[in-house]
Amino acid sequence: MSTIIIDGKKISQDIKDELKKEVEELNKKEIYPGLAVVLVGNNPASKVYVSNKKKACEYIGIRSFSYELPEETSEEELLNLIDVLNKDEKVNGILVQLPLPKHINEKKILLAINPKKDVDCFHPYNVGLITIGDLDGFLPCTPAGIIELIKRTNIDIEGKKCVVVGRSNIVGKPVSLLLLSNNGTVEICHSRTKNLSGICKEADILVAAIGKPKFITADMIKEGAVLIDVGINRLENGKLCGDIDFENCKEKAKAITPVPGGVGPMTIAMLMKNCVKAALMQN
Ligand code: BQF
Picture 1: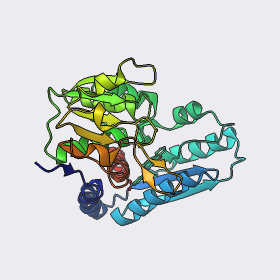
Picture 2: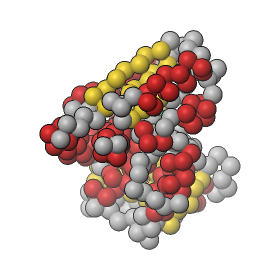
Picture 3: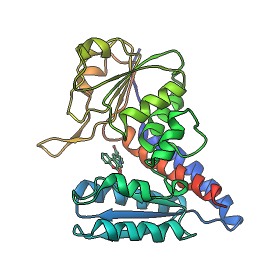
């Protein structure tokens, strides 16, 4: 059997086309979804991500309001902007691009965003809803994108042994919760895990969100495993590579996501989905 290369670019395009139609219908009812995109500083990767998000808004027909603030912006200034956006009825979703400059307390900023406009699903209230298994509100973008990739490839999660490598608040922890809500049996591994290799080798579904290029090698995976690569690492030659050694693992896997063009585009598509949901909830 040949390996399925999970085409995140194609699947995200399908989702964006579905959303485009939905927004056309909303427009007929005079509902115009709007997203505020806030970027502080000059992180080159953040600039690319923000540009990807604005382009997706434009494609779908979501209004985007862009705020590009200098690196020296104070925490108070940013909090003031969030306060204005929280009160602005044209703004259904507020996205503050992470990471923020070191002099700004990220936690304080995320707490200030109105949970009803928290399209990244980073506010503790929304994280709490995910934790108690209430998936009716916003879903965290990268984790939701991963679930969508798996489902749209017709892979069952129920009863499967899912191993998540990485425990970040943005990916590792929330994707574990979503896999659990989908009746997966979930094990979370991290830098202090003993026998990481042995645990990975038991996974039917392996999610790699470590941040180390080609960390997962063929000897660490089970024959026929589904491999989801969240890593975006830039190599010295300028090329992007994932946390999974793609060439080395792909023969052994049942399905695998590429980098780029796997999970990344899905993150954007699910953000757009949250924006449309925000507009619906607020109207
Ligand atoms: C692709 C992100 C780490 C930290 C903060 C498409 C994106 C990436 C890759 C993208 C990411 C990663 C985003 C591809 C947004 C995903 O073709 O493979 C899109 O724009 N992402 C972010 O906003 O913040 C991050 C990763």
